[in-house]
Image (cartoon, helix red, strand yellow):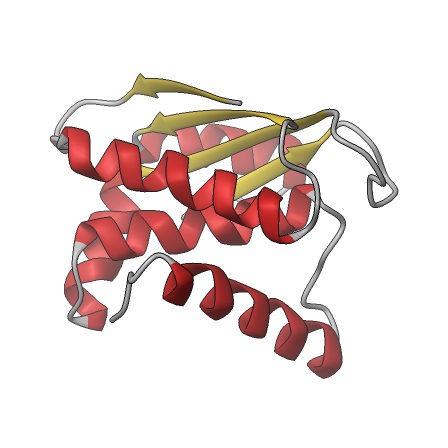
Length: 146
């Protein structure tokens, strides 16, 4: 189950984008055998994202996505996983920079965030390659391409 809360002004998100984000999270969970898990997704503006990034990571700037897992270890069964927060303005800017749709960028960011909730990371080249593979696998299965 995905609970979505939109707390931002300035970027209008069509229902198709919101549905794609929800489906992306659900597909990612399903690919890991964790369908039925719960995720909270908040869509915020850059000001709120900057505040969260500074408060929780000590980084004094905005970012595109933050994940706050409830457990430190990779879950083995469906559970309440945690929170994903996405900056809508940052996603819109990145979609323009990368030359793809906002739907694709938002879907990518929530899959990335979901993988972090599931215990994946990208601190080493091997971890990064695994995350990239899983992200593309989920997005490709949904027909979401660049």
